[in-house]
Length: 530
Image (tube, rainbow, N blue to C red; front, side, top):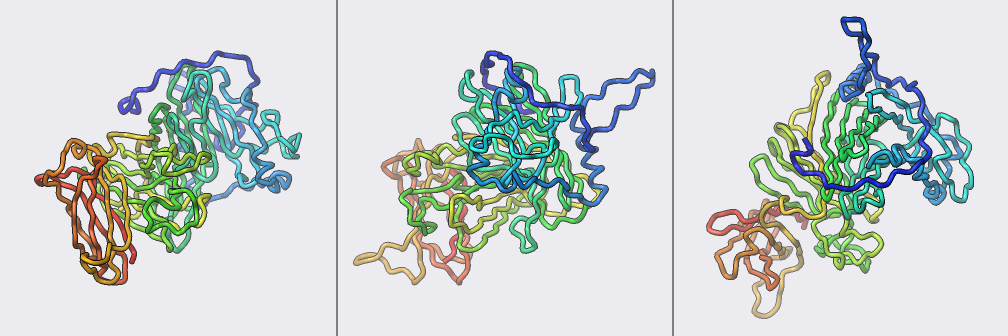
């Protein structure tokens, strides 16, 4: 399926070299798949492990109450400082499939905040499953000098996959799974920012959020020149058990095709499908600026973008509110949504270390009909850039039933720039402030605010002033006046409005540009709290 969306980039394999292999052992785990039945002729056939096996395991778990792992982290590892933990380094020569394929896998050591154990398995070329057991010789321990005292069955906290993404001579980090159901993926010339998750449950709810976890992973051994990697995962939590399949294809735009099947143990008030998480501290709009910081902008993503089932493109600039804010954009069979880093100019961040301009945008494209529901955006107040405070996901309109499997299929893209998302004019800036005042200027009611939205791209770039480009603006709970549309010297188009709230509550604004009635741009969606 992935190949239908983007052809793989041709990268040469690194030269093979002898290296130690990570420890393996026959599969003793209770999550091992059932043995294959013998065929009618009595000759036993070798069982090829696949996604159906993971589904069976998830279904079996769902038939019982949730049993969190009893495995505890030894004190020697639990009490490591952040610096001590970061100094535990994996020896790359011991990575799984080292010099045997384009993909190689390194394992995260347990310790500090990464306390939970995940079970890791390799699916061989013949379909057999082998457990990947803990081996302290795969690490250097920095100032600790030697491995802290730990049991032989310590296991790992997660893993990361490497691939020659930038050059054939070096294998860069491509995708990692670490903590709960979080995973992060990179395309070419990108640095980690936003994260994806397997599932979100009751995010932003007063009852509190439930965090499902990936408990088991199966890494399918690729052939030497394969440019796609298959990963299976088993998810578990108090309310749900689930099977996941990830098909990873690296490139300038790295694609992850996701299949999942979910089995509910109990009713879930709010199920979040294909969740994405990011950080937004502040942007160029002074309305959200309350920080004494020399940097113009600080964020991993600056907007929520969506394409509705009817084909309409939406852009909602992110905010760092003073109070928790939850918005849902109702839809049917959505065509896509994502958390996007649209500002790519390094000067707009002024941060040579963080390099926010290289953080990937994540776009989710449903494959198949998802029915009625909505894309929900949760924005959480934050005072520091170290916290992820933005979450988005799809919420089905009807509460999912217990006892009936749910399946979702989608394509996650990690990219820097794209002319496809959206294909026409798009928002390049949102700014707001007090309306201009003084002699000769109109007087506006108390509480009025000037908002400026700048558009570029698509047909807008070919239009010379002054064609009759119009701005279509609506305001829920607000009065709009002094609407103007102008072409800037840089070639963008600027819509300016004065908004006065009708009551002391949020004003929801929409704006897009048209020419002779034809829509030229995505729809800018904004929520202003007076």
